[in-house]
Image (cartoon, rainbow, N blue to C red; front, side, top):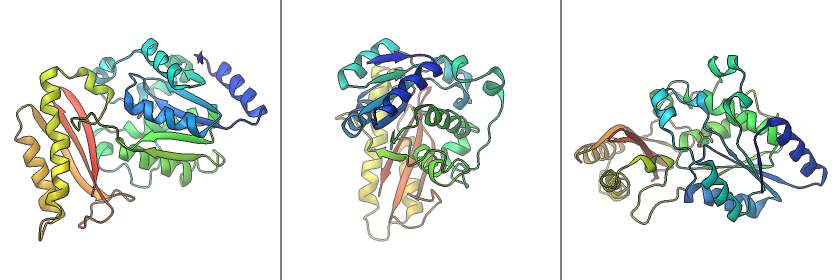
Length: 286
Ligand code: PAF
C-alpha cells in the first residue's frame, strides 16, 4: 500500500493502473476510520482491482470552525488499518494541495434539485456544496469505476447519486457507479461514527437511546391507525425525554425524493441529535 499526498503523484499512479486495464474503486473518507469505513473498503477491495481510499478532513464542508478543529485525525492508525484490509493507495493531501486559497474561501453552489433544502442541508448551510466540491474533485483525480459511501449519511448519498447522474456534472465521470453500503452498528445498536470518539463513556451510554428509539418506531409504525406525523413526533419526544440528548430534527421522508411523506411505504426516518456537544446522525428505513 502506498500513501500519496500530492495530486500529481496520484494521477501518475492512477494512469499506470488504467494502462494495465485495472478497475479502480474509490472510498472517500475524512479519516478516523472505524468498522463502518472498513466495511466499505472491504467491499471495494472485493469488487475492484485497485482500491483508493482518500483520507481528507475537507474544510469546505464544515460550517462550524470548532467542529472542524475538533474533528478527530489519526492518519497513522488509519493507514495501518487500511493496509490490513488490502487498500492499494491512501490519498491524504493537505488542504493547500486540494484547494487554492480562493477555492478554500469561495462559496461553491451546485444545484441539487432541492435535495439539499431540508434536514442536513437546512441545518448546515453550504455543507453539501463543500461535500460535492471535494467528492467531484476526487472523482476527476481518481476516475473510479465505482465509489462507495455509507448509508448513515443518507442525504449525502442521495446528493452524490444526483450529482453523478443528473446534475451539470453528469456524464463527466464515465460509467461511474455510486454504491451505498448499510450502516454498521455496535452490538448495542449505536451507529458507528468518527464523532463517537468524542463521547465520554457516559455519553455513549446515553446515545444508545437514539437507535433504540428508531428501532422502536418500526413497531409504532405498525400500530393500527399509526400516522407518519404521530410517529415522527413520538420519536422526537422519546429522545428528548432522555437527559443529555436533544433532537435537532427527525423527519420521515421518501427514500428517493427526500420529500416529506404521509406513508411509511418507501420511507426513511433521518435524525440528528446532540449528545452533549457532539452532533450524531442516524436513520432507519420503514
Ligand atoms: O462522509 C464523509 O466522510 C465526507 O462527507 C466525504 C464523503 C468523505 C467528503 O468529505
